[in-house]
Image 1 (spheres, rainbow, N blue to C red):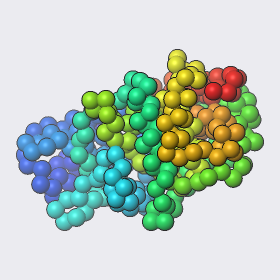
Image 2: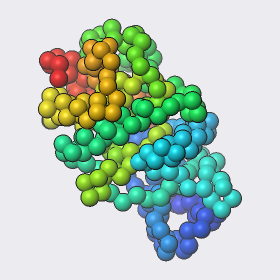
Image 3: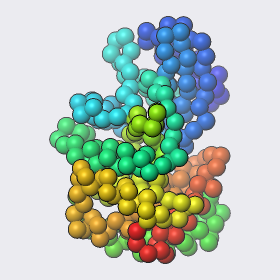
Length: 306
């Protein structure tokens, strides 16, 4: 759909908000799963998100999750209701939510950034799940392995990378069937899903892929996002992350034993997500991202533990 059609829908939706006069609407070229627009008005700045991947049911679950997170003052961007209290707008072809546009930037990331993200994640992992909707992880080992073993040649990933994916998965696989502590996870805490302002963590963004799943999935994913140097494991950064995390929530012996396996698996799982998405419609930079993630996992699988 052309940007003009999105902009028309944005104007129609924001007519039910107390936004004032719309001065400018501009598309933000970031993210693979959603389509985002920044909207400048004479009163404030907003972010309007079209949910390209999520079902209406899962978006409703995300709204319920936001209500829980707000009670714990968790740093994230909370969707805004319109004048009638409506939060989700079932536009065509994608549902829409409106957010405040938070000021800040993605981290480099530096040591202090790593500490703050680790502490925020540990806080997230201590939030009780009783009132949080049940939702499965969209990245699942058996499904990913089935996809990778049945890929046709040239389907967004070459034969060499496919072989590296399978080899790395085999090294992580034994830990993936062990029953480890579970609870609320974000599912995708990479630097581009965090926002810092004046060296302080403002928000962990985009809870689209939240789930009730193994905490180690979140930990492994975030170490992949924050604790590498030149796409290679960085022991010093990993130690900083784990030290900050364990000040709030201590890892169990089984979690410590399986940490490396989950660091490998989460990189492979994210590569799998991109491969599935790429099969539907390849996006700019997606093949490069797939390669980076598979090599990230392979490098970890063939290095000493952090």
